[in-house]
Amino acid sequence: MRSFTTRVLFPATLAPAMLWLSFSCNSPAPKSTAAKNDSTVAVSFVKQEAQRKVDVLMDGKLFTSYTWPDSVYKPILYPVMNAAGVAITRGYPLQPREGERSDHRHQVGIWLNYGNVNGYDFWGNGAEGERQVKLGAVKHLAIESAEGGDGEGTLRVKASWVDSSGRELLAESSSYHFIADGTTRIIDRITTLTASVNKVDFPDTKEGFLGIRVARQLELPSDEELTLLDAQGVPTKIKALSNEGITGNYRSSEGVTGADVWGTRARWMDLYGSIGNEKISVVICDHPGNISYPTYWHARGYGLFAANPFGVKDFTKEKQELNYSLEAGKSVTFRYRFIISSGQQLTDESINSYADAFAKEYEQ
Image (cartoon, rainbow, N blue to C red; front, side, top):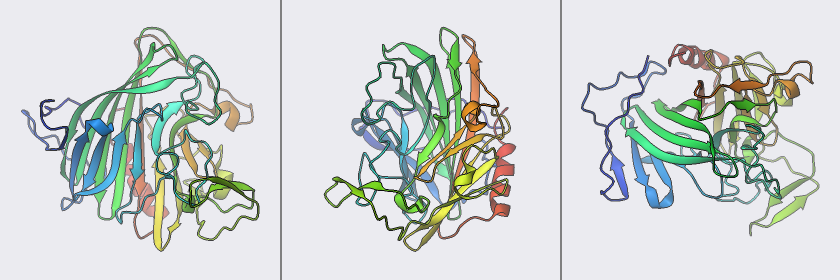
């Protein structure tokens, strides 16, 4: 199992935008067995404090950025690219593209938060038209370490879940493992949440937990009336919707497909399709060490793709309910894997192989 010890960082007095190299006073960390790392692909990090982000590079090309914009109210990975340089995440609202939806502006990049933590909404903070007082935010605190390497790099960060008065409810410690496996890109996110001072409750709601908002082309075809952005970035209602180029479809580890995956349980979910001529799969894997494994899926046709271990009541049509609590000073850890293909759509056999390897990784 991989340890999570903090590595040495360059002094803060160095230039604000610089390449972080991987080094340590201890023995090198063991290479992950989570995937067949492609040692020919160099993973590196560039810190850009003024822009509130750390770029993640693979062979010098942007894979994603860990970023914490003021307008988003949580740290996110944005944008996320596949090995061919195609953005799989929606641009709106940070970098809007023509033809995109302009809904749910709080759904941007890859994020982790929840819609009800001690009565505070962390999920919907930043949504258009939001007027509620009880909104929570996840505040980025620090980059603990950034370790580049051949085929894999690891970024460790600290964050704080605060209520609308700025009081901390949860302390977050997260590590992101960025892995290259040929033309497949992998992100393993390991997040530990600790109840800071008082007991923390997670009342049952569908609005959570680990999510990504994908590019328009990876949405499921639909005949509903939509509001899309025109060439000038102005929201425009489209009644007779063309599904040209809209290619997405879901498939779960249990064989459920399409919009029917919403509210079902599965150990992995694949959203596959094409952006232009580029065939793509975006897969999220749950981990046996997580609560509610295999997780419920808050996966919508309009491009929201999320795993939610807490939302049992909504997903079971009120037949069951889970109101999770974390006692003061106690911690809970969540482990998730993203798999992003390039030039091909992944088979069940391939996804199962990645999921099996992931299940054996990281301490439970």
